[in-house]
Length: 301
Length: 223
Image (cartoon, rainbow over all chains, first blue to last red; front, side, top):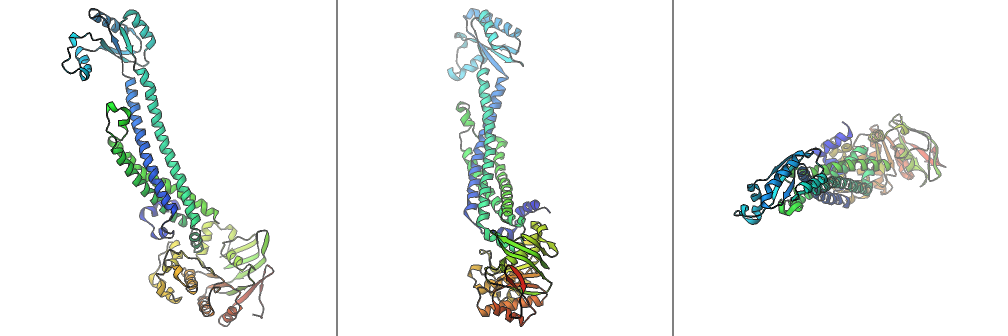
């Protein structure tokens, strides 16, 4: 059996003797617990930010592919004619996949949240709204505006996709930064555990001398430290993850009016993702401690 | 068992040992003597590969130490029991765990009866659960002997094992080592206590080596 396999095996089933050869406590071990807890806490929030950014990016990117609106404001007797002109223009415009005028009922439904259900649509000089769906490739917005101003002066293209694009890109970048933050947190944890393990090895020089005198191989000595630091990191990360998940759970629920900040949490199956952080922290600690221990033991010849 | 061929060891620019040649045959009993700082401890450390010679060859169980991997050295040490003057233990673990440590690092389970017999043999049967810092100097030395022999080693190297002990305790420890030799173990004791050597020679056929002017010589009848 290889030493690495033996290490992982002893980690799972417990190697009481190897575990006991190192004195039970020390500042380095406590530092590992604290660091792992703090890092896991931060990682949960980075994860929440990354997932929320991802959802936002997807939502905005989806909106990009859907619609723009043309608003036609004209005297009542010209409204139908201008609407038809605009629809004809859109039918001839390359890059417009579909276009249709909203019905009175649909317009009433849009206004209902502000004016109530008894709005007399027929009595108000409301503009007509045309919803258009962009094709791939898209249409020439400036060209369409020029043609509309020439042939239907009351028509205004509300090209809201143009301001959503940079926001969607920003959300994508935010998601990337979230992932990068988690990677950096993992690297910082590895660095801290490496420092702590190296300090623990230096502080236990007598233990190492005694073990070597009685014929202990480096892998046995390393195993004692690896097990200790891995379990410490695992425990600390579990506490940090649990605390952060409770914190995320108490964030305000998703609310359209609240925008981005109220969506900063986990939804559905995504609540399971943070549960991977403690084992991941344990794995990082295992690799970092084993590498540091074997390197330090080679130096201590 | 252990052989030195023209071995030299330098430290800090100065040569501590030079042209050292000796052989520890199976079942032999050797004393190594010389003034303080002569290199007795260095020679002992060379004999269990804690130090590497700067010239010449040290051979342990027919293998030159320079060719041994770190794991090979660890395995060789399981066949060599070492007792130091300032013996070190894992102070947070009870005596019985310290004594059985060589078995633990070799992934071997201790036989409770054998361990009990061993502690009785060294007179520490009532101290099994004591922590090392609570033991007297003599008790620590006897515990070190117990730890050194628990694996049934072929060779026992003792570096000033009686340095911190009174005469009565020194004789008791010597008796333990003589008994081990009679069981077939190869013994090398570094000491500057000539009375101890004289006493041992009345019990066992011991050869006495002396370090003088960086070289190892066979001591004469003056001992």
